Image (cartoon, one colour):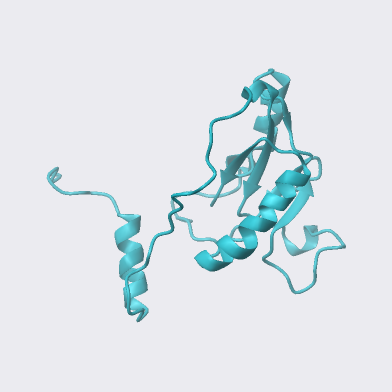
Amino acid sequence: MIDRAHRTFVSYIDKSREFYGAQGYGAPYQWAYNDDAPFAPLTKPLSQSRLGIVTTSFLYRDDRPSDWPEGKAKHVYALGIDDVPAKMYTEDLSWDKDATHTDDLGTFLPIQHAKDMVADGRLGSISPRFYGVPTDYSQRRTNEIDAPAVLELVQADEVDVVLLVPL
């Protein structure tokens, strides 16, 4: 019989706090929050907006363009939406590999789904590039390096709304 008076799922927050405590960190993990994050209502309908897609997955070494920076396996990048490989590298990221898989690219890089929305008139357009950002547990790197780099890319592509698809 299930005890319905207590949680029966694994609490990500509790498990993370326990993990960092076991690593010897003196203070509990501080979750990121951004009270001044620039979230705002859309200024125009989605049917007139340009969508940018950001993923935390990466290209396999053999699929990387020739101008890929050597020695920078995990850096912010942008690639054309018409040149998406059939599979992305996800094995180094933390997800339940026994219960699920990342063989279906559309589940974490939904470019084809976005193209279908454009064809149906529900979305104005898609950025000509999709964007990748490394999974990094450093709030400093995220805030000071990666987020500004992604912002610069989406602004250059005149993106109105961004879909973040982390693994």
